[in-house]
Length: 395
Image (cartoon, rainbow, N blue to C red; front, side, top):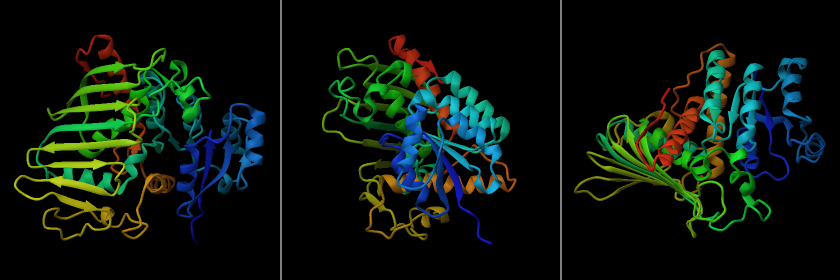
C-alpha cells in the first residue's frame, strides 16, 4: 500500500503574501505532500474568505489556535503532519509554541522569532518533545549549497582561513514603508514587528546560515556595525559584522538593502589554505573552485561525476539530488522543494518511531534558527558598544 501524502497546514499566507506561494509550489512538487488547511489572516472574517477563494479546496480556520485545537477531533489520516508558518516575524513564536505543545512538527520562515529569549523557549520546547522542526533558510536547498558544503568540509580546500558571506539588495534604498508597505516593508521596518534588526535579521541571517552550513563552523564572537542610511527609518538598512570562527578563522557577514542595482545578491566565498570556493545565488547552479597554479574549476549541477579526480568520493545524495536534467536551470522554487522534500523524509521517519536529529546537513533546524537570533543579539550589543567584540551565545 502506498503511503498517503503528508497533510500540511498554513499559518499566514493570505491576501497575496509572496512567501506562501513558493512554499505551496514546493509542497506540491513531488505529489507526496499537500496543503489541506489554513489560518490565513489575523482577522477571522478575512481568514475564512481567503480560504473560500483559495485556488484549490482547503479547510479554512478563523485562527491558528482553532486549527491546532481541531486536530484532536479529526481522524488520523486527516490530521496535520506539519504546520508551515509564513507570517511576519512577530507572529512566529506563538503558533510555533502551540504546535509543539500539540505534538505537530513545524517548518517556520526565518528568522525563527524576534528575540533570543523567545528562540531559547522554542528550542527547549521542541527538543523536549524530540519534534521535527525546520527553519526555511531557502538557499540551503540549492544543490550548489550541498555541493559546496561537501567540498569545504571534506578538506579539499584545506583549513578555512576566511569567509566572506554577503547578501546585498537595493529595494529599501528609498523610504517605501509609508507608501503601502510593498514587499512587507511596513512591518519589516517596525521594531515591534520585525525585532531589533531589519537588515541583519531579514537577510543577514541568510548570509550567516550560508556560512555556517557550507563550512560547518560557528561564529563565536562579532564586532558589528548596524547603520541606517534612510532618514527616519527606525531600524538598520546596512549591516556589517566582522566575525571570529570556531576554528580560529575569520569572516565577514555583510548585508545591505540600500545598494541600488542589487536584487537578491547572496554570495559566499570560502578561502582555505589550499584553495577558494565561490558561489552566488543569482547563478545558483555554478560553483567555482580556485586552486594555486591551476585554471579555475567550474562545476555545474548535473555535471559532477562520482569519479572526478579532484573531488574524490562525492556522496550519492549530491549526485542524485536532481529532479530536472542539466540545461533546465533550477532556481528559487526548486530550493524550497528540496527543503520540504528532506523535511518530509524526517517527518515520516519520526512518525515511524525514529529519533529526530537536530544536527542536520540538508536544511536548517530549530537550533540553526536559534543561532541566527544569538548572532543578531551579539551584533546588537556590539553595535551599541561601538563595535566592541561580543561573544555569541552558542548554547
